[in-house]
Length: 503
Image (cartoon, rainbow, N blue to C red; front, side, top):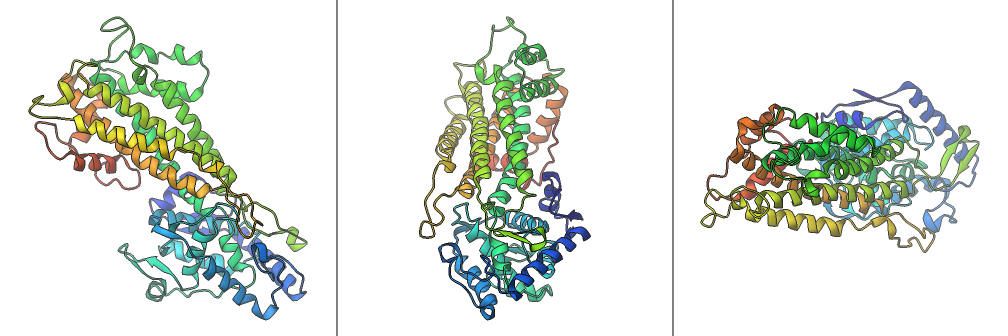
């Protein structure tokens, strides 16, 4: 069980909760903070103070006062009216992440919700009741209002959830089957559930987990391509990377040397050629730059997953209640746009390596790695697919964060589009992993032609592992299935056939 306290959650802990399905507990200190924050809200209500979101309307309607007897209806109406996201639902893992992150934010004690609400969120997580949340509809400011409203619907016994078999069903049925009682929202609680960045951050965390694995896998796949092309290892000499000064570049070069240690296929300067093409020679510089972006993204995510993004914030035991803008997703919007570019570049360089593996004018391998060039096309069209995916990534890489459309009668006149950035980053990640799957298949085949026994010991292990997933190209076949099988094996969330360990 992972203890949540609102302040110390990490991506590594989230991996355990999201991938390993570990449960959560709430720290005693956090329970006390929630209780104190709630007491402040109840005092505000009792003393009839006018505070946004507690006894007023929302957005442009914030100047409309709401009577005390209508407070519950106010929160219920808020959730129902805001639950208007559209499109395909997020994967269950994203829904689970949203609940964990929303719970962690509430536990900071600045949101004014009752302890029963945070306990219900923990119960949903531990009993794996995951709301069905359509993907499209958030502007990424005033929080991820629409998607988080769908999360809140499940807590009040409305909307839909995934059952234990992954089917979409009415939430009321699943709650009844699991002995969970829905909540009747009280003052401030509806707003506290939907005013935050937890949708974009949930997608962002899942994106980061997948992108990090892609970055590691791109290195050993590139190393196997190096062997298939008898690349020059001198370009990875530590002195080259020390004088540049980027630690990520140095680390990639070091890992590449480790992957290639003991190889009988790599060459030295002047043995076959003086220098390699950039897609081989510049792997540390290019992959290293992507790692710089990944480090930036991780830093921002780990700040945001422990942030108070509610509005208004209940501060100083209720003595200070301030309407601010912590719900604005600009920091995560920038991070997701940066992630898009970083991962897209891993696909760009991978596709160029695929071209070098299949183009007979660029290597001494059989044309298109075909067992019978001419009669059989071999990997020819796999490179087409990689090129198509790379091209699509370029379109998706356009920054969402530079866009803004005013909303709520121009009260909310600048928004982040951070959730759009995160969603597009997810698509780029899926495309990039498939490009790497194609490079992997081609590198396996090139290594086979050059001699598997000549591979480095570490890459012989990889070759053997992945040959169990995708057989040798002895004749043309439907390669689509092979690409998907390797893609699944490289996916840290979906893979079932193999376990890939980072260097």
